[in-house]
Length: 195
Image 1 (tube, helix red, strand yellow):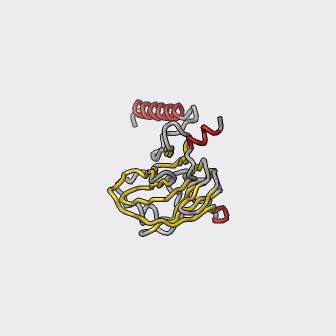
Image 2 (cartoon, one colour; image 1 turned 30 degrees about the vertical axis):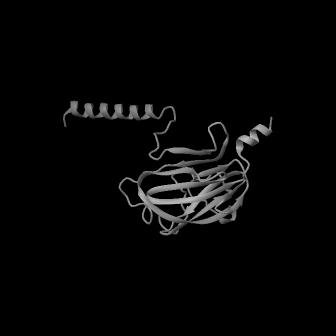
Image 3 (cartoon, rainbow, N blue to C red; image 1 turned 60 degrees about the vertical axis):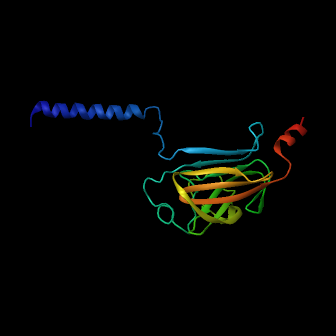
């Protein structure tokens, strides 16, 4: 081989190695393909939240999701990467089950016609790999409905009346609604009573 050719290859390899080590020199990782998001529910913009969900938002990427990427009948992290965490700022009825204010992991067992949603007290876990039913706080079953396709997994809230809201989970054409009931006293009244 030509000596200049070998020298050129060696120089290019060294340059490539130096760029790789510089890009990770500060210890930062690349942007995650499924970023985390936060969804809150507040009675008004002036009141503290009643519930907050922190979750990973995977995208569909032209795949069939439920029954394929997310198998039916298996515990799922209800999002991507870290297990989804839900914080209730007040005691709540979660699908009819009384749950104390606090932070929980939200897991699910998707099915074709219904989902089982699980609140677990085992926090700071990766995915659903460390799921242990001994930490279950509540389990509820809710029906599945269909709607337009969503590219990215989403969680939001919808107010039903003075003390009832729905937590909506949606991805692909699947929708799940979880009823949440808070005590009748509104948050802004509670704030005024503390003064």
